[in-house]
Length: 131
Image (cartoon, rainbow, N blue to C red; front, top):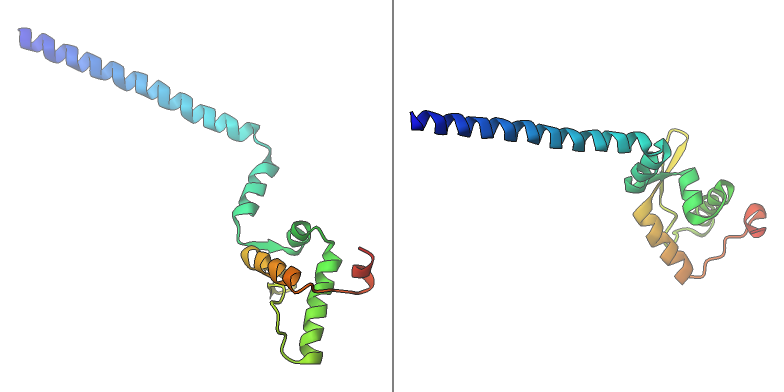
């Protein structure tokens, strides 16, 4: 008889632990869900954009603190140097074009910034000269 009470007591304690654990886990899940509701939608999008290796033209312009037109002018200037002078010795602005959209590799963009500043490059044009 004593053995039955021990098993019954153990089962009761196990059941209580399961119920208490469910409440703890439920509260944590609910708290995480509430945090998602309280977090602005733009903040999640910003985090995703920070993690993504490619940036759009607008993101790249913001990253470089330039206008979109200035970034396009740099691309045109480097391509014109290739056409006019032959091989381009330096690091070009890293981009790829998919349909009509330009995408820029964030890591390679940092390398380009270092190279352009070390070489003291000057990009002059109507829209670049003003800034």
